[in-house]
Amino acid sequence: MTDMSTQMSHINHDIGKLLLRITVGGLMLFHGIHKLTHGHDFIISSLKNKGLPEFLWLGVPIGEVLFPVFLILGLFTRTASLVIAFTMAMSIYLAFSGTAFQINEFGAWNAELNIFYLFVSVAIFFLGAGKYSVYQTKY
Image (cartoon, rainbow, N blue to C red; front, side, top):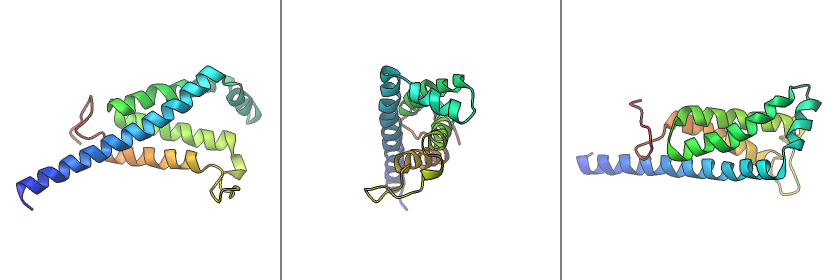
């Protein structure tokens, strides 16, 4: 491979990583802001029903607002992606429980979107932020 094609390959990888970060972070941010502006009573009642402490609702502004912003910026990308993945795992547990993998009327899993966010966030963890980020790591 020539130096030019190697350089183009890295640019393409970095643009792909940026697009993944913007997509997951940006779309997750809308979910978090919606919950903050329209209330989080559903989350609190879901936590209570599962026997979990109510204060865990604070995971919403952290996992669906703060860390998505970090992800978009490429700031603490690996940590942000894991927090988002954990937030999605919790949302699957709280909102869907045993029905997450049931097929809905559209032919998809009930928790399809949450599962998608979870796995893409894990993929971002393994990929890293890429060149177009506020904070770059060497690994």
